[in-house]
Amino acid sequence: MTPLFPVRPRLLLGPGPSPVHDRILEALGRPTIGHLDPQFLAIMDDVNARLRRLFGTENTLTFPVSGTGSAAQEAAMANLLEPGDTAIVGINGVFGGRLKEMAARMGAQVVSVEAEWGRIIDPEQMIQAHRKHPEARLVAIVHAETSTGVHQPLADIGRHLADSDTLFVVDTVTSLGGVPTELDANGVDVAYSGTQKCLGVPPGLAPISFSPRAVERIRTRSVPCQSWYLDAGLLADYVGEGAQRKYHHTAPINMMYALHEGLLMADEEGLDARFERHAEVGGRLQTEVEARGFSMFAQEGYRLPQLTAARLPEGTVEGPLRKALLEDHGIEVGGGLGPAAGAIWRVGLMGSGATHENVDRLLAAIDTLLA
Ligand SMILES: *Cc1c(COP(=O)(O)O)cnc(C)c1O
Image (cartoon, rainbow, N blue to C red; front, side, top):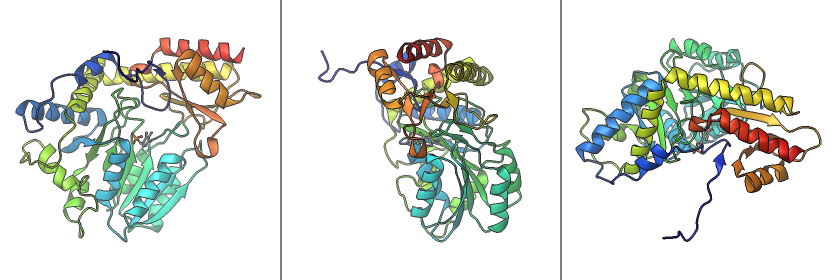
């Protein structure tokens, strides 16, 4: 049957969603079963085990939240914060700004540590802010700032916070599966992600991981989590191995198949090989576009391979070029956000999209458009 609104495929080289491999599309089409069916619970347990390995953590409470990355981001803030708490938030792009907004809506007093868009947040500044506010319940920062292409270092902040009662929360939406996250080695208590960036799975699930001390904090809250849907205490009774498997909400069954397939593919490739592929392909794109007159937006030495933010060559106007790239070449890239709107392109080489062939296709299209 011809669909009423047929969709032409695109080559997704923007900030997400990323291209979805046929194996994952096939997994989505498997028979829908019940969320308490032992077959489904076995798949979910395997998803959680593979997520732990990918995150680099032994955290028992690791599972996919129903929703996109923003749902897990909100889950992190809603579960850890109570009204009146202090939250220290690093802001150097859109997603740090959202962390602040969410923390404020939970009733927290937010201490912002800001850096110019395109630059990392100096870990020392975060540590100083914590020395000034040792009462802070959490310190939150974005590992891979998708609005700027900046790769934020985590280890020094994590090491500093390990000796305190303050939890370390990290946004790994664009890092998970593309660059190492190593939660335990970096002293991260809570990290969340999404399926449609470097995992190459459609949008709809959002992995999250809580350390034992984060779980303890949630269990000892004085007021309940303001979100019932995202309450990690309630969710733990369903998602945890050996838990009561108590119904909370219906898990997105077919999306779980898709995430499972994506994680299998990551493990088959090998995590180190996967990170190496992203590094190599993204590094090559950055060299090639610089040779064509683009200039990198993110600070040298701290550039994400999976998300290239670049100013266009002098004398070009980005909007019409990006439109022609989509309409004439079938390739999607992202424009700039906030202060970078109209000034940059954001090119994602994520998941199964991170290939030399895709770099070749994009460069050929750019050469045609700029000619
Ligand atoms: C995409 C993204 C989010 C939000 O995820 P959605 O899936 O769009 O809800 C949060 N943080 C970062 C760094 C992102 O790139």
